[in-house]
Image (tube, rainbow, N blue to C red; front, side):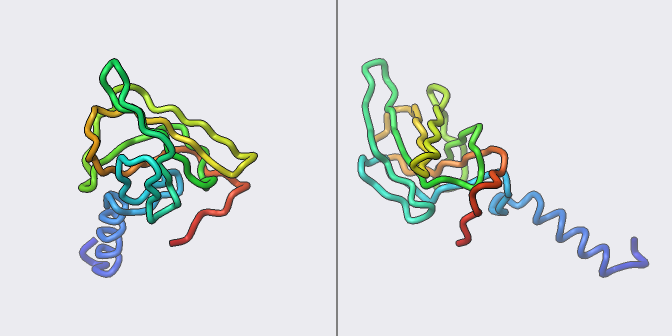
Length: 134
């Protein structure tokens, strides 16, 4: 490869971009930073916390909705503001409501009323929805 320094540099740069945590992917969507407050609306994607309950058996249940996404979400990941995973006490539920162009997500997290987080949804790209451009 040393005979092709430009090609080598491009391959290295491409590999770095492929593993960069901030790189956008067609099969995932990440909200902006959200606060665990009922009625809070994030500044990216229009994610809204519509309900927050402290359950008797320990965790807090957060319900949020987002506009229809360019993916059909299959898996939910919750991360803190620094990108570290937050433990989900129970498996998240995804409630797609494409008739109203909304996607609902129900999260079960440890009780921490002051937690700030992002939600990353993974799934297959949808052909009937254009991806949002930031």
